[in-house]
Length: 304
Image 1 (spheres, rainbow, N blue to C red):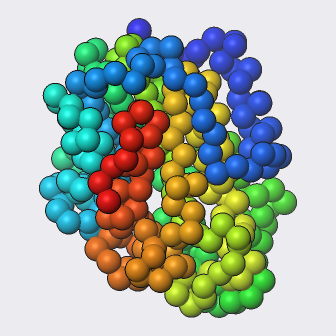
Image 2: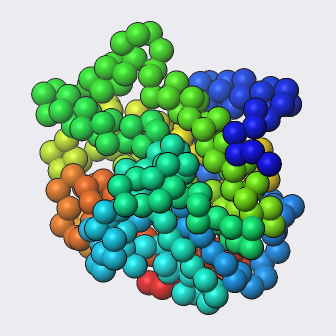
Image 3: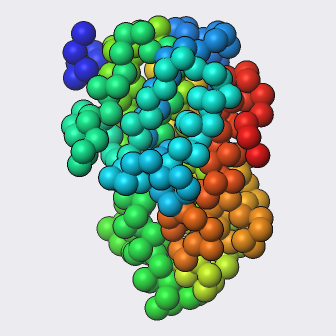
């Protein structure tokens, strides 16, 4: 079976639904849950686990870093899940900066991530899509504009200058890319249980801000919050199309965003106070995401 099959007319008809939902902004929820996949849907013992993903998976800056090229920590959420599930084999090939394209091609010294998925793999977690819409450039652009104009919504106006919100379009355009990744996972590991992991709450859910700690303009906080919710909504929908399970990490991390005090936050701001990359989960954030994954797996609580 080819990883690059077109998917047929039925699959092509899906994307107007996904695009319309994301563009319309309807049901802006933190995440959605889907029933256990038809393949590997039982909560039984996992023996061969592969983790795919970007820097939110790899855990840059969190001790102990075990792969400098990919900024990968052995305290990230896949590592916690692997220990708690007592898996027989575990391959974490997540890599900072990864997009959906890195599923098929090497990234520095990291092989194509999908190469780690084998026919006997029975659990795969996938957290991808943030770099496809440009997480890093969005944060730097909005911080630059916010520093120049702390009030109003200069970031939203920047991305809507063409008359249509560019970030919403980018999310819609990322949907078929994530779909392709999930189809490739299923082709390589047809009996695996596949979990699509959403992104944690980066900003206050009530839309409030914390300038200058996070230098976004006041009205751009709710705009960026809703942009992340649209991304998570899309990931949940694509997971459902592919009979995968969606892991909501937004809800469990709400109230621990980068605007909170160092003692309470699980996401570090642009100048981290705990070991982590800017605007990324710290060790507590990775533990919270592990608990969310373990809950879906029926395992209970992770460390921390």
